Length: 220
Image (cartoon, rainbow, N blue to C red):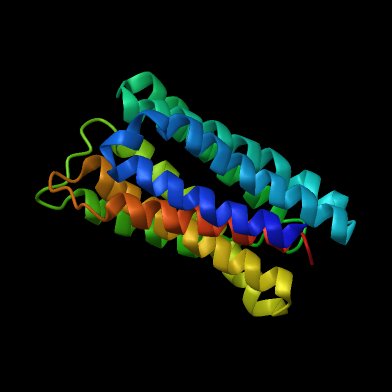
């Protein structure tokens, strides 16, 4: 059953990309993105059924649900941009990242060294916002706070992967790294004056690839 769902996940992803680039499909963007996002929750649920690791599943589930909410909100924002839908989407993702990070602490407890990488990445993010064509307007504090938590998630995932080298640990490490890459791309999608046609594709590929890895980690 899991194999079938993974195939459907890939097929719907192709449809989602079509809604981003094909004029006739744009009206279906919100619907297709919602189905795609329900997919990673479905995969996580099936993975928990096979692994019977319901404790880890329920610790990760709130993060998945918040990502779903963020996806839907930003899909509506793509259709009709507004500060409200944008902030709801970004806020949902931020809380989702924090909840994923909390779930990671079930595997490897918090250490003060966990702060080194996110602090460095906040510095990197600040330097990126100072680029000539980057215009974050009054969103700089939000960008830096968001950068801190997504980098903290990536750093903890990398630590878990390097410490354990189990299938679950590697998937958590890869998934959290793809999350970071996806969010760095978002910085350019929303705030960089020059828009790149392939930007949305790479953002969605790394984002949904990252969530797929996190969902499959429950299998082990």
